[in-house]
Every structure is written in C-alpha cells, then in structure tokens.
Length: 431
Image (cartoon, rainbow, N blue to C red; front, side, top):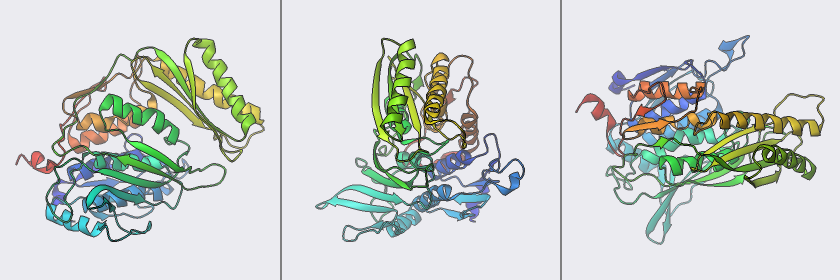
C-alpha cells in the first residue's frame, strides 16, 4: 500500500453486531472521505457457535459492493476476494488519477456496454446532451440487493461528479444516476423491496431531505422456494457540488392514521386468509383508521410467505414490521402458518407503536450515516424506554471511528458537515 496508509483506520470486524453492516458502512465512509481503512476478522461473529472460526469472511454479495466502490474511487485493495477475512481499502486522493480511472470505466455514446463488462458507468445521451449515467452490479447469488445499495448509496448521493475525461469537478445540475442491481429482493433478515419502497425511501426523502429515489422491480429475487436472482433499477439524483445536508430531527410522531398491508403468498386462498386475519386485528384496535393494500401478489411457491405491515402517522412518519416466514419444516398446516405470520408481524408492529418513537428498529441504523454527515445536530426520537438496536450501535461506532463524530446517550449526533466535493483528508490534517 502507499504512504496514505499512515492515516489508515483499523476496525475490528467482530465489534458489537460483528456482521456485514460494519463492513458496508466502513467502505461507504472511506469512499466518501478517501480515508483508508482496514477491516479485520470480517463478519467474525457469523460462524456457527460450534466453530466460529469457520464462518465469516466476504460473501459474493459483499464483494459486489466492494468491487463497485473500489472502481468508483480508484481504490487500492488487499483481500478483495470471497471468504477473505481481512480487507484493506485505500481510495485515491489524486483527482488526475481518479479521472484517468473513470475514463477507463466509462463508455462513450458510440459504444454499448455488455452487462458483464467492467464498465462502471455508461453515458446516455439525448442527441448531443448527456442526460444520465447508467451502472450495473451483477450477482451470482440472490444475496440482498438492498444491502449492496446500503453500501453504495451515500457515495452516489454525496460524491462530486467529474467532467468526462478530466479531473475537473462538474458543478452543473447533477445528472440522474441509474443503477441496476441483481440479487435478492425478498430475503430473510434483510430489507425487502416492499419495506424499502414503503418505509425507508419515503422517510429518507420526507424527513432527511434525500432527493426522491425511484425504484423499479424488474424481477423478484428469492432465497425461499428455490434460489432466484432478481433485479431492481434505482434512479438516484446526487446532491450538487458544495452541498451540505442540513440538520434534521425525528420528533413528535403523531397518532396512527392508516395501515398499509403487503402480502406475498402462494395462491388466492392463502392471500385472502392473511388479508382477513390482519384486517380483523387492525379494526379491533383501530376501528377508524384507513387500511390500504399496496401489494397482494402471488409468490409462486408454498415456501414463499411474506407480510409487511406499515403504520403511518398524522405527522408523516412510517413504522414497519415484516416477516418472510422461515420456520423450519413443521407439521403446521397452511392456515396455521398464515396465523403465525399475522400474529408475529402484528405483535412486533404493536411493540413499535407502543414505544412512541418516530422510527422502527429496522430504520434506526439506516439513519446513522446521514446523522454523521449532516451539518448540525441530527436527532432521532427512538421512543420511551428503548435504546439503540445492536445494528445501530455498530453503525454509530463505525461512524465515530472513521469520522470522529460522537453520539450522545439519546442518539443525537453533531454531524461533521460533509460538503460534496470537499477533500476531507485535508480537513483532517488541518491544511
């Protein structure tokens, strides 16, 4: 590695949650700030209890995000391979070197980029006018698409675009970036397409101030009922050069005014059963609320049973809980599985509503990176008698290690006021 490694931030991959989230956020912040990082014992808590040393390491889905960010930042890397338990990631700080790298990774209007090419961005024109940039992230497994998005989204939003084939920053209106990611859209223990569409992205736009991000589900990707690799298109408009994200506050949740129910189940009988059961649950406690059914869809397999329940409040907050039914083979009938699905999701959402906070457990850790990057204090009301989730604690720890920010006991953070296009390492050195 180069002399920049003297600034290297070393992170123990077994800290707190000790999974892939630590790696994703570390890579994301390193890519933005061009601060080199080393993550050791990657996903060190992901092995079986009987032999923890046999698990962990980079999976194919993690590697997709690492490779994309390495290309985008001209990073030097060590350990960028499947099952690697240590990764060093050092983005270039030389604009000319990055421009040369990007020139190799872009393709002109006169060519077409095959989906399996090494081209990072493909320029799209309307006549002589460049209208957007396209990128494609392939997958060999149905690993979660949204965990890849989690790793690259801050970089896409906050990185300053360069003019084509030069080291000069483009200070004009940012171009639309269209990113197609292959993988899983509905995967256990990962955000689902429905949750991201109905909770995460609306909250990021309305409450944080992120430009609207449009999603198109090209094909569902599953890990249940047989592995199927899916595909989603994301349209993202980056922030303009020199922009700082203003402080934001999640407070005063308001009363629950409506529920949104999304069902993926095998056959009309199963979907009707889930729909009737959850409707009865809602009306029993909230007789005057509206109920919407944005998704009621055939899942294509008896092993694919999914429910998302979202509570929307009078002040525009959304709380969601979901479950991709994943209990091992049991003697439960189809009706019993439907009942178990509804009972669990309803119970979990009830707990989210009762704490009085503005975010659900899944949303907490998604906000940490934006709190850390914002200008001023960003506050999140988590609710009464409720602390940060383990994922959230891990995200805060990473942000503190890489950026030097601090979170108080209530979860508020005085952001570091990251400006799009700034040379952050010069700020660190006091230049």
